[in-house]
Each structure stands twice: as structure tokens, then as C-alpha cells.
Length: 206
Image (cartoon, rainbow, N blue to C red; front, side):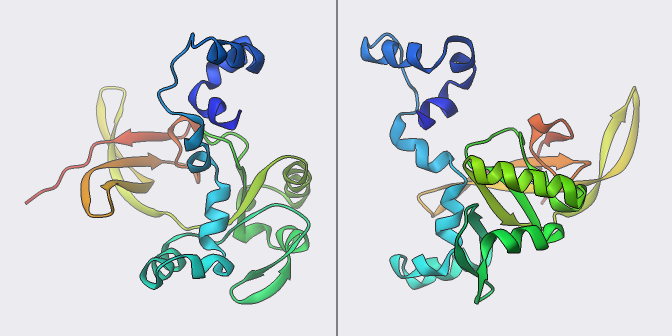
């Protein structure tokens, strides 16, 4: 049912999962994105891509790219793993390195449930860790966002302020880039629906 959560979250909240399953069985609904896409929506994918134990499954150039660009990510659980080539016990490491880390629901979206270690107290972080141990969550190394000064409308006046910025190019078959999603935020979470972010146009100036 994870795939249905992503595709029809609002419908599930209104009708429940059982009603969605019955509708699928009767072929009374159409899913634009099917259940096989569920894995792509889970942040646990990044735990696979960033763990060097899986590097042998990728071509060397792909493994190198993953190591450079995917932040360190692990599924939150009582387990031993590695960080920067060093063996660690994951849960004590998470508790003791709050300011370097972010906790996220594995199946979340819209910034819901994201806890940034630098933005909370040690007590709040411990509660978030307990929650993460009881339901699917990931922990990620916090990435410093690039910032810049951007214009915005203050009422009817043009003003300028510093925003964190994220650029997400749309790539096709690993060869073609066509378009780019640009997100700006006054806070540490870029997601637009989290409340502090917004989308912006991208212009290529020759």
C-alpha cells in the first residue's frame, strides 16, 4: 500500500485503504503511477545508494558518482554500520551527533515529520529518534544549502532577501537535461509545502 499512499494520499485519508483496494479490484479507479514505482518514493533508497557495501552492484563510474553526490543515509534501526569508513553503532551515533544529522520519515512528503538537528534541543531530538525507531525513518547527513539574494514582492514593493536555494534538473536516460526545478526557502527545509519554501523560475542568460 505504500505506492497508493504516494499516488492517492488525499483519497486514502478520506476513504481508507480498504476502499481503495476494493476499487482497484473492481477496476473502478485508474492509477497513473503503479505500485512498482513505490521504491522510488521511499527515502530508504538513499540508504542503499550511499552505503559502500552496495557499491559492487554499480559500475565504477556510477559508484563514484553516488559517493560524491548522495548524502550519507541510513534506515533508522538498532544496527551496526559505517560512517566515513569507520564502524559505528547507529542509534548511539544518531543521538550523539544531532547537529550533523536530519531525521525524516521514509515515506513522508511535503517536509512532514522532518527534524533538523540544528533546529531542535537534545530532548526533542531524543523524542524524534524514539519515533524514528518505531516507524520507518531514515537519518541523513545534513547538507549545507547554497544561499543567494533573491527578489520578492513585499506587498506591492520589490524587496530583496537571502534565501537557501536548491536546483533540481530534470534528466532523461542519463544523457539529456531539459528544465530545472528551482526551490527557495527562508528556512532549512526547501520543500514548498513545508510552509517556508517557494518555487521560482530559472532563466539562462546568454
